[in-house]
Image (cartoon, rainbow, N blue to C red; front, side, top):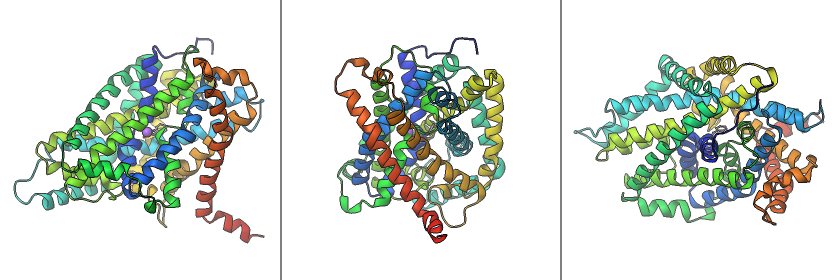
Length: 465
Ligand code: PHE
Ligand code: NA
């Protein structure tokens, strides 16, 4: 189209929007419970290594693709590769992943709205009579009641998608950037309060030891794969988000420094979320390995037995809702950018259409009470759960692998890639290039291999011969 491309209004606006995409349910809901499930310190160490050696280089590659082509993910690969080349598939896969993930991300985000409402109603106040036992039952009843109630979940899902629509329709500067500049500081403030609260509680020491003293006897190969997969999810990689946000980035910005800041913020926030949550779990004598219910079932019980716990619960679920919102808008924007750039749609029409579609596609997910299965897949997956499993376990790593391979091996213009060296350092470019050519594709190739082997697909094909 003829109008000049929208750009971020300021460096801080871009950093907050991109960090807003990265910081989400992945940091505050998923990171603490997978750390708990995988025994703490050793898992955290592996996760940090995965972020540094695989996540960070791919993040820079995605920002680079976006800024260089100034297009949505499909258009970006089309512009880079020869017309008709199979590389545009990489763009399609990432937009498809964004589409599928938004539809259920919004359902889980909707749960946080229910908890906010309950906290406002005082549901997490300490019961005067029997304390923990009574609260544990109430919280379980609340959660079960929620996931079994189709209408409630649909209502929250509708509301959440509606808020995303309201923000994204405002555009890059007046919608996404403006709201990120409001929501991210609020999120950081809430997290700081909860962190201080954790540090002041009895379990603080135990939490530090649990998270930072590696016990390698607890490290399984499954945990290593999970750490690598989560590095993708948490940095918003493989879902077109960083390509799209990079496409609004001014040429004057240093990609290396930007990528580093975003990844650092995401990582620090995940660690601080752990340090806010584990101390209170330990002081209450509860287990860190409670699974996906840690945040929705365990934490509220712990809160309601603390003085001022209802307020803490309110702050916590507000934090979760803000984090989910800034992530969900990046998933929506990545798809909107496609319709605007490739199909010449107007922003309003594109946003309304895609938000409506995300709502519709999320309906089965809101109505299936066993959504959490996508975290711990078990034998009888429903249709929707299977689609979701395919999106997060296969589409993301595949599109990440394609990105690394393209940028590392097929993008031959070294000069363009040296944009990364805007800070004039002599070692950053070769180091990054080595990681993106060898380390990232090999590591991602290995997870994909094991994930596919797990499904028995290889054995199935081998059996055919
Ligand atoms: N990074 C987000 C999180 O940690 C999830 C997400 C992935 C958001 C991809 C946007 C795009 O929750
Ligand atoms: Na994240």
